[in-house]
Length: 209
Image 1 (cartoon, rainbow, N blue to C red):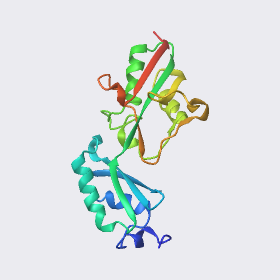
Image 2 (tube, one colour):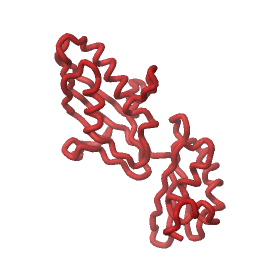
Image 3 (tube, helix red, strand yellow):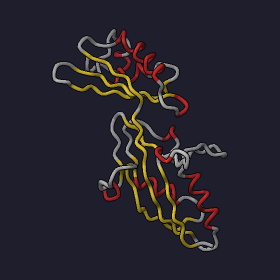
């Protein structure tokens, strides 16, 4: 049963793998994504299911209770069940940006904030940290961040000064080229001055005019 393909597992009376629990949780119409892990407590397994709701909001208790009720008929005997919100990983990033001659620093800065932001843009593109670009367990790659920044018109070069989890000391993320994210975690960088605890982006602009 553990090796059964997903199409066959979908018809099982019980969830078998952590992936089964996650896919069943995603059947709830208010759930965009879900992830699950099985952890041995010493006497039994506990299934930890994390929920990422539609619309980018945090999962409230009502939704968590509904997902738990949805999962209960599929819960395998001997599995305890815990349903929680996705764990956000707020980031702290600081970039030193060299602007090409002839470009206005203010214009380039505004374009960078859009390109590296968490919003949907007017032309249909999504900012680098838009919630739909981020998912459970996906590390943040330094190379992709730098590529997104240098693709902005007027940017000559980018030097990364800070690249880490917010409120935590550096742990070699720049050297490793990524910020690791756990299986029930989702990276977050809203760069909202009213909610700095949701991630911050600092830009120091040099050159240009």
